[in-house]
Image (cartoon, rainbow, N blue to C red; front, side):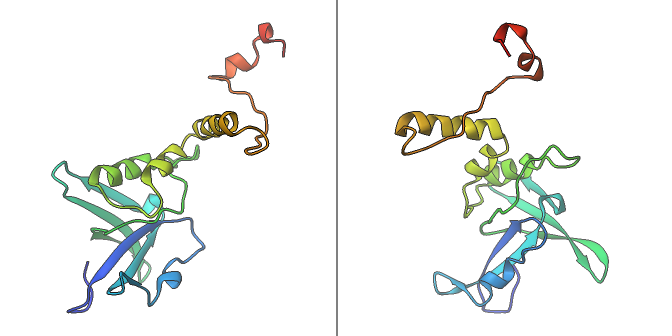
Length: 161
């Protein structure tokens, strides 16, 4: 991952919403007391990824350099994801990047499994319902909700709504 001669660096591209600069939290920190941590921060929309079954992979990241967008390729040692991987907005589906990171076997501070599961809010709520049933309302209170598999079911008169 580049760096000064003789220096070992652990690099982490951090898909993150704009505003919070994660590099300042890791400045001067070392991994296992020996490797400097180099933070490469970008939004999902600025990342592209290719992963091969043999374990080789590469992440391309668009960055602004002197007001010009350039693409840098890197091979992260691990990732920290601080951005939702899916939204209904145009261009908001970044599940492919999460799948590619999993395919490549890139370690993640927050599990890629949980990042992917959080792409589907009803799925997350279903998991919370499971915990609510297991632990009980005193231990795991939950606001009552109703799930419909599609919008037509919401207006079915047979349901008494």
